[in-house]
Image (cartoon, rainbow, N blue to C red):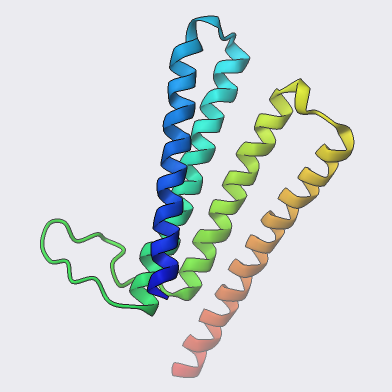
Length: 153
């Protein structure tokens, strides 16, 4: 699995390059942007940031769960170390996907050039599918945790 996580780290670097390019673009044309374009640019930056967070969640928790434990001691030890199991990971992933989808949908709503009604309908259905999947996963995990507690007692 380690080579996969190395590849995801490289993908994170690619996202960072895209973020820097977008940030540079925003600063170079900032004087000419109207309010809506500024908001759309900021939403693009947030979208890239959330995608980066999603990659970090997968890289760190996947590495910790499936490859090797991090040996960090002291002040720099993250709070989540050792506490993200597969159930928590999938909920974090789906919530990140819902957030990314929601921000992209908001960006499309605000940019009238991207408002093809047919495409918009499919984007909303996709977003609602992510939301419903997240709710179903959370419900299944809740039921599973209650079932495990009842078996223990």
